[in-house]
Image (cartoon, rainbow, N blue to C red):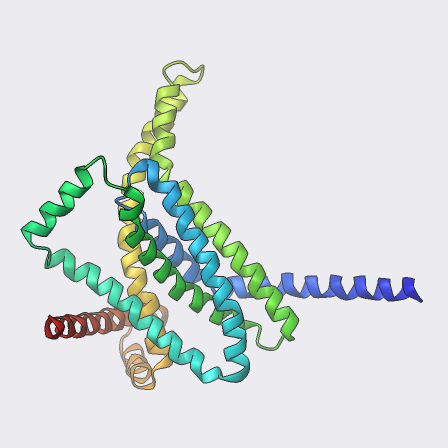
Length: 303
């Protein structure tokens, strides 16, 4: 009897793991677009950090991302079970935050807001060898973790929606497996991207003494040339991703905006997918600009 019970338990566990594996693949496909945005945004967050501090910053953000998911997975399951409408509200708030972040970057690029004294103080701080770089990086790390929280929330909600018909234990298994895989995969790639230039420099130095010096020299130079170009590209893609993800959340969850987007998509004689992407981006930028203006007005009144 005991042996039969043990075999039944093993069979149940195997079935559960098989279900988790299959549904994790389905959920991963559903969230692939957001994962690409997550990678671009997180790689962009590390820009401006000194080379020797890049990996510690990536590691700090990765730990924050894991903590985000520890909070988000049970919260999403509880909200989905008891107050499902709250998920949409939280998604809209998160979408507005992403739009705000993107619009702030764009507007500050064309309309700098730092005065000369603030810029000089910032440069003096960066030049001071006694300054604690970890303290200076805290703000950057916090911003990256906040952005990761929004993207992680959307990934988890999308994944949860794709496995809504599964039993509770399977849902937990899928969300936990997907969260771990996403965190390791995204931040592993981010670490690889930000260290490309260091690898290129290492290969160039190695080519001076190695047997395959020509190959190492070409590869090293290629990496050194590609690394800054890739980081600039990811910075642009990351900003655009904020508008696309945030705007997509708004157009899919706010009735008026969704109706207006459908009218535009049906009226423009281009592929629906292309028009939908453009509409999401425009909606995201407009929403972000409005939030930036609101924050600016509120800050002025507070001062």
